[in-house]
Length: 214
View 1 (cartoon, rainbow, N blue to C red):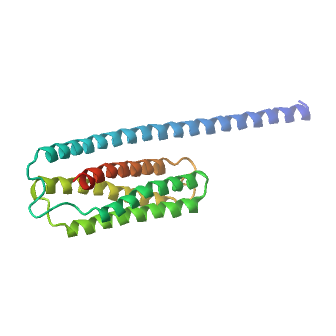
View 2 (cartoon, one colour; view 1 turned 90 degrees about the horizontal axis):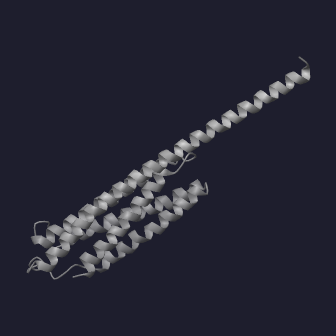
View 3 (cartoon, rainbow, N blue to C red; view 1 turned 180 degrees about the vertical axis):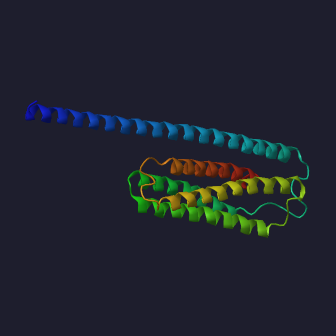
């Protein structure tokens, strides 16, 4: 066998190895993409189930409000709207902030992502603080009639979701400091962001039912 023939065989072998490695890489990427798709589908199903729970609460609140004679507890004329409205603006605005955080991550601007992600966490935490202050200043409790029970149930259950969202965001922020963590996909960030939008939409409905419809 001549030197030229040996070089040709070696080159052919190298090309075959490169094609095999490329094919394996594509298969791995496709498999990871399918896993992310399946995970996101499962997460969406979870959010749908959560929506059903909230919708049942909304329906119950509407039924009780329209059928109960003495709706408000004795001595209570209504709910303060100003501070909850400010908290609502902050929480809803955080949906736009987390959107920009996602955009920065997809552009591989990790520090831009961290900054806007942290800002979203701060806005969510402020909302929880504002809700705690409101609860502390209320003149009725959980056992103060149907209204008191429904109010604390709805705002408390939603507040638990806000807290869960902030903790998820904290987890994603910590994971952003792991080298190469987001090179193979952003499922955790995408799912957390979707959950946060869900929480914001739920609060808009609650704000209308509890504070505007009095």
